[in-house]
Image (cartoon, rainbow, N blue to C red; front, top):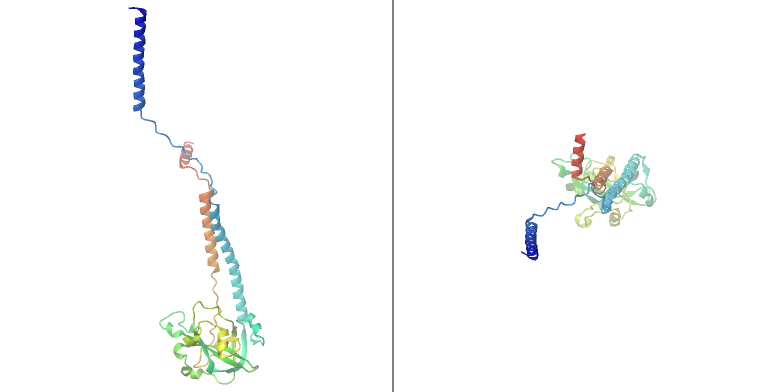
Length: 298
């Protein structure tokens, strides 16, 4: 056998083996299971986000409302103190100038004159502040009635004012039911100056209903033809068979301390939640576990 023939056989054998190797590599690459990709680890400490800054308006607004309620509480306490001082102040004469009455509400005055029962009007429905069951009980409905407002002609001047004589039950609203209490002749009464009530959210027609829902001095004075001066007669003006005087209620609601606690608590709570979510760095769970393990080895 010649040299060329042997060389060809060797190359042929090598080529055959190379083809087998290529087939094996191709088959192995097709049947080999690819390795599972490991997801990227989350950062050990999460970055702080600036998207929560607008939410800071919630605790800031709550804090501002709490501070405003402090100012409101101080104003209400000063007002209550002022009213108490007026109620305890000495009795004065009724001023000649109506404009002076604006700063004299709840101030005690003494007047002398005569009642004109023919033109009396009513404010209601009202409870009798001096009834024992006003605050509740089986007969509470019997204490509901009206306040009798009667024109009062002053003796020392040519002027007629309005005087709230006090409370009568609805059943005693007609004058014939309380004829004994219709005072005749000149009398002297002590009372407190009152101004207009705030306008009621309920519509009323006093000519149709027979009474006003609130103390509307302007309307009453225009209808009965008196000056726009209104006095609540005190309890000493009460006579047998007549209205029960002393129906002035000077207590004021003062719940501002509750509002202060509520708004400041809301401000603290919302600020704590905001800091926890947006500002406090959050350590990843795996890092915490690793730190615990290392700490346990020490």
